[in-house]
Length: 325
Ligand code: SAM
Image 1 (cartoon, rainbow, N blue to C red):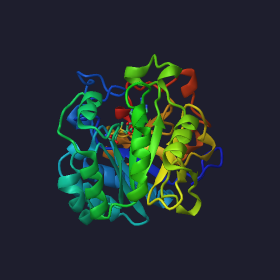
Image 2 (spheres, rainbow, N blue to C red; image 1 turned 135 degrees about the horizontal axis):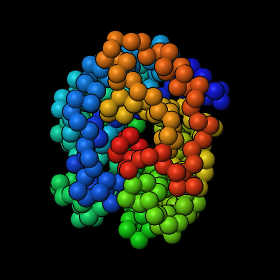
Image 3 (cartoon, rainbow, N blue to C red; image 1 turned 45 degrees about the vertical axis):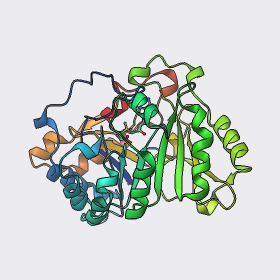
Image 4 (cartoon, rainbow, N blue to C red; image 1 turned 180 degrees about the vertical axis):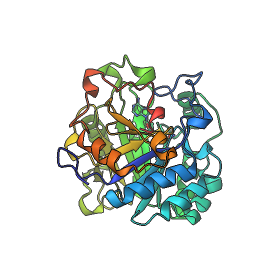
């Protein structure tokens, strides 16, 4: 289905919880946020029903996100329900990776296609400092588990913060030589804890690519070798490398013109723009047994042409954990 700008909307990001077991410096406050009441959160059956009703309108690809989606019990059940919906071609998961060593194979068996893991450092002590939680997390073991389970392409999201983790750019770049992993550097965005973010905290993608180029002795556009996905990342690879390097640049580039997505919050609001204020409620119509398709059509007709992140307008968000990024 096309929106008012003629953009084809095929991708639904589904947040299944607003809670997280991390408290990343740039996302949620250390003491957490006021959590959604349980009764307001869509059940797995309700989430699957939303997908069943939107698939005939052209929604083909799904991402399960949060908060941290893997802390919601029996995630495998939801994965199975979503992959069974006729018309759904791809179901991916965004996670901080904490459960992957134990559960990657189970997610795959339930039908999950692939995983994006967020990891802002390769060093255990630094991960704990950025996440403000020490869960003994080993990112290399988690990525290896995802790869072994066949949750490919395996992508790693790294939010760069000047002076905090930007000294690891080269280490991440070198990982792509031998591993078929796709490292994506994301520019820090001024949301929540970072409302007063200054440009000096952001590491622009041009610098990231130059440093990767130096570390690997050359980079070229990944072209046909870029990993399958739905997003705005631009991919590069070192000739002969197993993996790629991507940059996601919300602060230095605009890609709203190619936007293909809408978001469902854990409490059943459809948000048509990550940083826009436009949203419609699905939960009450769903619970009254009404059809969602007319509401969806109207929402797409009203989807904003672009966001205004650079003017520090973040659509009422206190943290990206509230909509799943
Ligand atoms: N918990 C899951 C995870 O870790 O991927 C999914 C939700 S998390 C909110 C989604 C992504 O948003 C993560 O990669 C996180 O690093 C990113 N994120 C959160 N706040 C951000 C900010 N202010 N700027 C840039 N990225 C941010």
